[in-house]
Amino acid sequence: MKLTAFSIVFLLVLVLVSPVFGAWEDALENLKEKALGGDGRAEEVLAEIYLTGEGVPRDDGEARYWAEMAAEQGRPRSQNILATFFAAGAAGRVDQAEAVRWWTLASEQGHAEAQYHLGLRYARGEGVPADSRKAQHWLEKSAVQGTPAAQYALGVMFEFGTGIEVNSQEAAKWYAKAAQAGLAIAQENLGLMYARGKGVPQDLLKAYFWTRLAADQGRLHARRQLQELGEAMTGGQKAEAGRALEIWQVCREGAPAFCNIDWETR
Image (tube, one colour):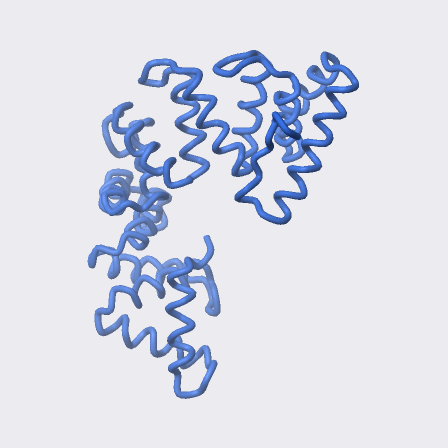
C-alpha cells in the first residue's frame, strides 16, 4: 500500500507550516498533536504512515490504533484499513464478520477498494451469508470506479453464471476493462474469449494480442495458448499483432490511461 494523494498533500502542508521549514520530524510531531486532539484527518494519515512505513519504521500496531480512531469518526480509508486488519488477523484475531462491518461502512461512503472486498465476501460467504446479488451490487459499484480486480471478478461472475445469469457479452465487457488496465488474468481470459468467439466475434488477432500481453506477465496458461494461436495464424496476422503490441508498449510507457488500440484504423 502507498500513501494516498490526500495523505501526501496533508503532510506537505504540515511540513510547510513546521517551525523549521521542511523538517519531517516537526511535521510528524505536529501530526501527532492533531491526532491526539481528535483530528480524524490526522489520525487517518498517521495510520497510513505507519502502515506503509513512509518516513517511520512500519508498525502495524500503531497503524491499527490510529486507523481505529479515524474509523470511529467515519473516515472511509481508515475503515477499509481496519477491515483489512481484521480479515488478515493483524488486529490480534481473524474476524471476518468485523471486517465486513467496517467494509460496509466504508463502502456506503463510496470507497472503491472496500466495495471490492465487500463484494468478494458476499460472493464467498465470508463473514456474511453468501449473496450473489449483493456481491454483484458491490462489485459493480467498485468496477465503475475503475477497480481492475472488481472488473475481473464481475467478468468471472457473468462468464460462469456464479449466482447470476450467464452473460458472455457482459463478461467480455468487464474483462476488457480490466485488461486495458493491465490485469494479466483478465487479459488471458479476454484472449480466450476472442479465440473461442465467446461473447465477442471470434478474432484470432485480438486473441493473440491479449494472450501475448498476459503471457508476458508470466501467465503460464497464456503461454501455452499463445503457441496454439500462433500455429493457427498467418504471417500477416502475426505481423499486425506485433504492430499493435508495439503501439501498446509505447502507450503504456507514455500515457497508460489512453491505451485503447483502435483495431479499425491501426
